[in-house]
Length: 289
Image 1: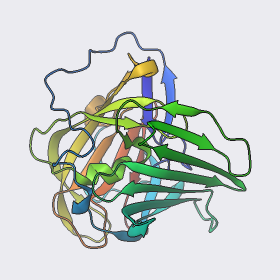
Image 2 (image 1 turned 90 degrees about the vertical axis):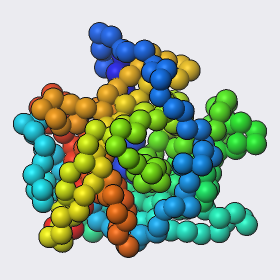
Image 3 (image 1 turned 120 degrees about the horizontal axis):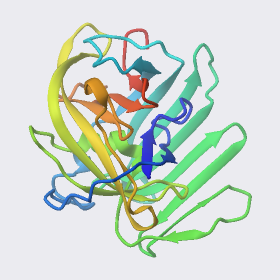
């Protein structure tokens, strides 16, 4: 089986990851020679992050002919406004990552999402997704080793047990920004997907670097990072790779992470994810956003 993590639907991309599965002939074994960074690892410190507010990302498609050129825009079928704010909730220092997704030309969001994470470890505490009048809440109880998802005012859903502390896959761009990237870095990080999406080993690895223009005419160097995913538990044996044909993206996703931090901008400025054999979804900061 192959898991696709990424922008399967424009309205859900980067607000909450979407999983689909399809048949695959073979999956490689889980790597045994890659360092494992558990939540709380000193190299994975959320205190290195910087806040940003209402940063606009275009959401469109690109063909599989090859890489995007520096400054190349995609035709936006939707856009997303992203924020990361430092707050204190219930006496705890947290990051709140929020996102609102809009269809092109519309001013009312289709989906809004919020993920609350511990400021230092980035361990998830709560996630909320709203679409119209519907709302879904996920609560992570690490003391009791369980996570539950429910609709406020409705019946409480069953709780799923947790056997290890994990990052929330729906906040992938946030914890990817906290990693101190360098040439050749490849690590394994435990993650889970809110709402019953399963548990996964996220295996990001640097495949190079290249200049990128986020719409202001300035060329900045960015790490290019492919993300492979291996399933745990009931998802064991499910694998999805980050690299695609012609040096494009695979279904696991490809990230562009600024080497030098820029005040007011997130570090992850582009995520590219394969939709099918001919096209990728691209979520990026670009001119006009």
